[in-house]
Amino acid sequence: MSASTEGALADTLGQPRVRRLVDIAWSGGALPVVVVAPDPDGAVAASLVGSEAVYGAPAPPETGPAGQMLRGAELARAEVSDITGVLLWPGRMTWVGPETITSLIEAHGAAPGSLLRPGWQGEVGWPVLLPLSAVDHLRAVSPERMPADVVREISSYVSTQVIDVGDPGVHFDADTPMRDLPPYEGPPEPPGGHRHEWGDAVAERGVDEDVPGEGRGLAPYPQAADDAAVDLD
Image 1: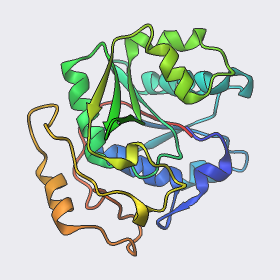
Image 2: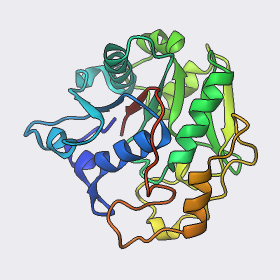
Image 3: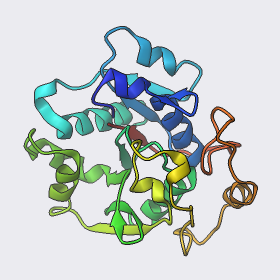
Image 4: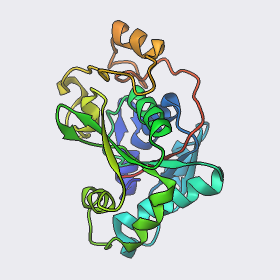
């Protein structure tokens, strides 16, 4: 989700921020991808043309971050009725790698009732994978709660696991230039017991920051598997 139109459209390696996040989510195997952001002039929706994303108008501002998370989850459920979890993704978290998304989806398969948080060097980060069975807990969260506090409150009701993904992008947001990120390490043990060859190939090749659309572990994009994702700022 993005709290502002400006944030959603901010240039990120030659792309609007939300378009980059959509591509990462799809590349990591998350479908449907739902973008929730203010869009008074239609520019956010226009930036998604040709992508796999669905645009959704945000919930009323007075519902706060929890209301926006709930809105995104409801839109995802409307797109695919049998989803079992949603990824809650602040739009400012632009450097998450697609292999991290794949790792969270695989871990969800092993622990379908748990709230999953990606970890990097002892820090928890974003996006968060919330089981659909826990989505209704969002309704009880105060609208004054900021996103991290929302997740902290939900975790008091739901079993929570931290998945070590070795990805600094889950901790560092758009305020940190890509060139200043610590190196990507990848998960010490693949959550599903399988290491993805495409991720290894990208790591070996490296990334050209001068090529629009390329990011850490972002290009080339593989075929995606089915699951659910939500984008947030």
